[in-house]
Length: 492
Image (cartoon, rainbow, N blue to C red; front, side, top):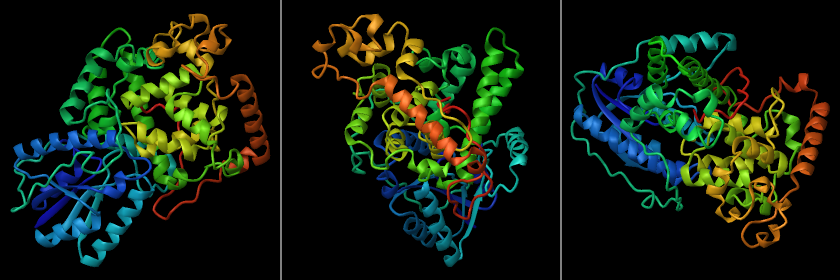
């Protein structure tokens, strides 16, 4: 039997349940489909594709060493799979379950319909602790822990390739006609890079994790930086959990016990958040708290939205964080929460306008993390009161010396430290205003007061007990909801 393994967000050979299953069935044809419609979507970007392309190049070399040809094809999934199945006598397709965006869900349903009509057996397997058709949410934690405790799967031995397979081309972002996306400090893709980061985090960088992760100054090094590798599957979550557990078992001293325990909690929260979107796919487009649909105008203020996206709001710590994100594709968890919460509560921007922008900027974009967290910090979920994240106070607390702010806002060089987060209070501000650095688009204190009043008015009107049971519309594939975690924390 010839078996096709359809790769998506699982770009590795190790601990790959779909590949292991296929290897026991017959000759294997691994395929990755480059879908232009997916990459032209509002939440996709060239920086993400470039990470994926590097990972595919690395995976292609690994597969060649194992005797397999990784087939790369560009086009619609149904058309590509249909051609491959006919040409190579494929009777079974094996892949991992994917909790993706609405587009990928619709594509998977089209593929399933085609496979039934074509008589192709289609098998989907979990690759993490996310459970499809979860009937009882009180069983989720135990089932997730069972999956993580099972031995990570080694590379199957004696892999047999399907004969006569052409490798196909790996296009550049330019060849795909993706919009230019300059990200000079983007993380590089590929399993080797992911393993290097995992090792350095668990043995060197991670000791101050719990205390250093909140600051943009120290978080860049102290955080694991594994999030894009987990998002696109160059590392499996299970091997990451087990590597961390092995390090815990070695009983390291210093701050390590707390750091490793905290990291394990975040790996757990990662699955928990993705389970939220698995259960409630409507979270990508509709407020979980139904009454919150009236909280902000669906058509945002274009000037404020453009200023926020460009990092030119006149609120220095917010602007520095957004410029840093544009240049690196990454932010630590507290800054992620701040840029989203400030856009929503201070600038009054609807999350459906800002969420796609952040999705494109994050190299580690994972829909099952992104959309529940976007809603959480926009204050439109039924399960948590939002944190308003005052950008001025947060800048003073997390960047007390101004090093981070000044690095990304060089136009503020003349401003003294005492006024750096509120430069409009500096007597010399008029020498900057309108020419080198803008005046704030909102008064922070007045905006915070208005946001707090709007939120409490909404909660009183909705009735939290009644609204906690009301969730966004659900397509038929998914079941019971879990509440999202309290922080936009999955930068890891």
